[in-house]
Length: 326
Picture 1 (cartoon, one colour):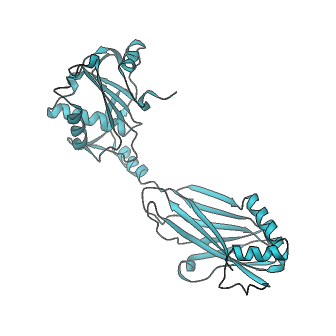
Picture 2 (spheres, helix red, strand yellow):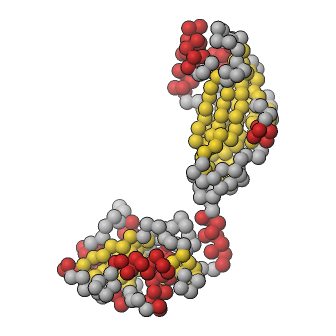
Picture 3 (cartoon, helix red, strand yellow):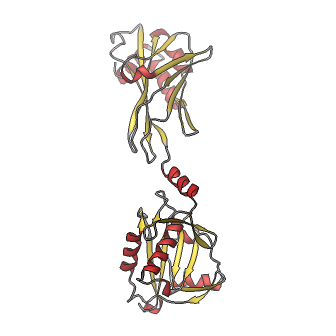
């Protein structure tokens, strides 16, 4: 069931059900009499306070035009829609709260189609851009239980830190035969494969505070290496009896929405061991950032099977080499 403050639309029936069922105010719901909306400085400041407080918390709805006693609705106390229009309400919200709150929706409900009997349901999302300031008194507020209270300094600081969250994910994993280092197409004795790992910044801030690792199962018949030029100068290489690890120690800065190749390495292998290599080939990619870790291991079994089918005979090997760019 959709929560009350996340409904797509509101109607007179919605409002009446709140009264009939004695739905109490909460962190996501507040009732206000019609006279709470006015164009005086005091009323504007109160409006900005209540709306910014809800956006700085978990979002919710404020219903202007209903009366409550002890937080329980008892009936209507309308807004005169001629005196206070939806447009004037929207204009006050947009000019009294900084930064602006995205995706606020105002639902005007006319009782008996009478504009003088209006109820405004203001739907406020939990904001990714919090904290929002009441620009009329230069203070930050947050909704707690049944009221809007001024935020403590540590709460404001925490809200800013939450907004600046780093979020990264894998965007691509490209695999190809390296035509610059592999031998002729006739029947290579040695082949070089190139692997590139790409990531995307899905967060709201640019960052270089992350690390990318690649783990490969060690196979005697192949050599793992990287080219010590450009960004690759920041790579480190460690190994044990079981695996090889390549790390980009100083990854490049990445902007919000940007995707970058951040780790590129090569595998050299004798062609006669190609089938054996891909039969056990497995690479784990890893991103570390802000106490988070994302790991992906591949390839998928269907991809491995396709590779093995292609290279299981000499004719298939030529097809494989052509497909992968040699």
